[in-house]
Image (cartoon, rainbow, N blue to C red; front, side, top):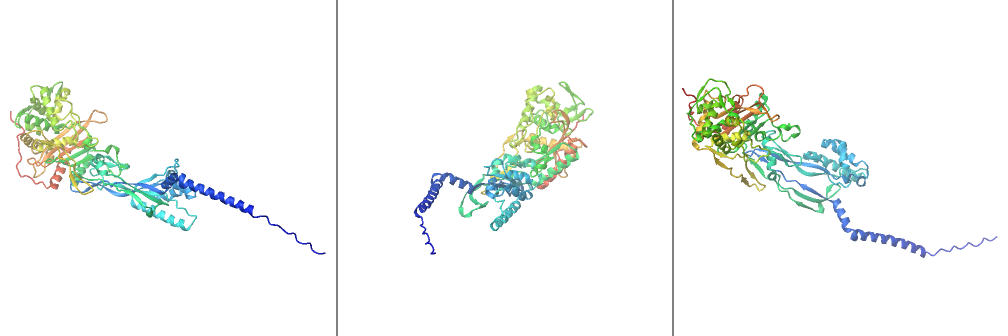
Length: 614
């Protein structure tokens, strides 16, 4: 049978489908246009800000801290380059790295380089505050440490460009240029210099006092970054840092070393609580050395004894003892109450007020000149001599007090040093019955070591007190040197009185009857005074142990250098000032005279009489 004819298929009209597709495409395009308008017009500011936030970073440009040198330009404190290692925690999230353990991977790489705990670093890189964009991983790292991290970052970046499964987990690690304070001398002059804290600010001593001068002004830099690296073509804005000024001290590094070495050895040998040595230029008031024992290394505070931090030579207040008798003698001579040859009969005991006073040793009646009273360091003779300063004891007290104040007791030195004490000197109308008679020989009044040294520098300088100084001047970033202001000068006694005192102080060292024989220096005329005072224990407020001291200057007839030494609570061997501080005085003075090239005068010693025949 014939095949049926094939059924014809009619194709549907394409127009509806085209209209549907066109409509769909139109809707998509409208959505894109709306979104584009939203991004580029309506919310442009918001998205621009977000882009800026993600693209641009701002870093502080730390100012280089000024150096501190001695009077000859030798570095005592200097600054070297370092880096603070930082990170942006938002760059370690899954959204950024497409891995869940980005912080842990980064911490594993960084921990051995930074010498830190891996778990701690991971916690820092995964903060609770998800918006936190800046954390500091390590402070003041060496350039070598940052170079190691940079090399790792470069290697990871290179690998991620060829291996799509690799991730640069260190892309969010950066470095802020910083600086590290270095003290080339270790513990040398640490009490004077102080230290710089973790925040980069001076934490003690001159580093703190002169922080604004040394610190300079930080700058800022803002640049575009991508993948943790700066985009050089995107431009940057920078406010340069202004370096700090260098500070030149009056300290002489070599004399400082000699003083520090001498006092440290004696404190250890005597098993003492501590000690100090001050060396001062008598003509200028400049401090050539200020040494403390025990000390500390300002570059390694983690291992420092907290009790040794600071500058004990200025912060400790103590009763000076017999070294202060020179003040009493200055008042007696200046007020014409006696002369060096005045006869004073010194009994074994002296009753004054409600007390019996004695000298350091029991003795028969001494027949001494006023010079002999100082040479043999007689408490009784000093009480008797100062009693002549007024018609009544109250008047005598007022006269003596006026001289103590003029010599600098009971007031600040003028250094403005952090933590400095002005000592304790009560007004004369508040002196107790015993203080009226103990203050003339240095008990019942407190000083610091610099005040005690300044007394002798005043005598050495012809009776004119020069305010002590530690800073010679500053040198700015432009290289220009600015000298420190001239120190204040005050006449305390006449030149005649000062020269007489210097001759009397020679008897302490030169005469066989004197208590300071161990301070003799061959070829030089030496003026000095011993001191052995009852010591107030700062922990209990009660007398315990002794303050041993020696003070003086040389050459006695043409003074250039003052040296003061004190040791607190020596517990082994002698505790007499002449025995343990006299040798330190000699050692440091000899070194200072040699360093400053001070020749002997060649003149004969004064040889004032010490005793008289009744």
